[in-house]
Image 1 (cartoon, rainbow, N blue to C red):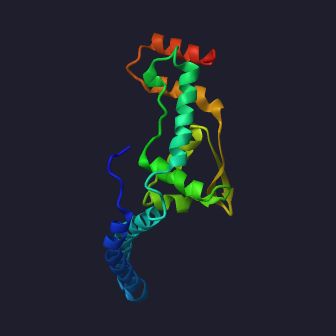
Image 2 (image 1 turned 120 degrees about the horizontal axis):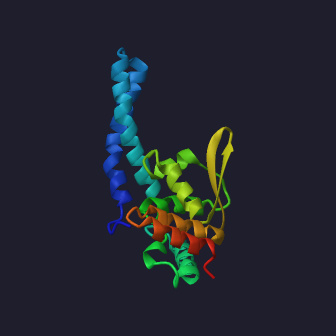
Image 3 (image 1 turned 45 degrees about the horizontal axis):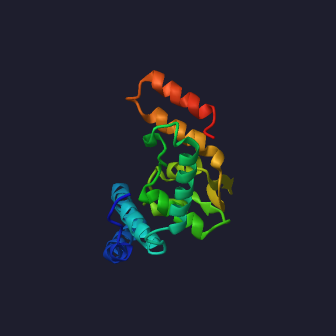
Length: 200
């Protein structure tokens, strides 16, 4: 995780004037514009400015550090070490998906524990990044109790509880092994066999 955290309040105040200017320009084109290209240009300018501003405003409602997120990851790390610590090299026992984006997405879901959160709202956290849903699915791959469904034709995500599915642990360790492209095939197969045999 990056050592420097965002300063959402400062970002929000910095972006407010740009957002107002961009929206006014876009509104003027919608109401009175004659050139389709000028309308498209105004839209393309406004869209990222608005996305960045809304990201900053969303972050103002999120904690600098989500303690629940870190406690759950620590529990997972401890259980992985307990199962495989004597049989699998340490570098393959690390818990992946530890970016600030993962933490912020979890924070939004955690604030709405048990409630459906539309995917577009989650995309506010990442300024409309196309990888938002992928980052959320990665949390599910760690065993977070996140349900992915559809409501009214749109994708929604729900953090159903703070329990973790520890049955995901073998898959986590397997994926760590398989991502190591420098590992000889014979050693990779041996480690995968150890994982399949169970760690206890």
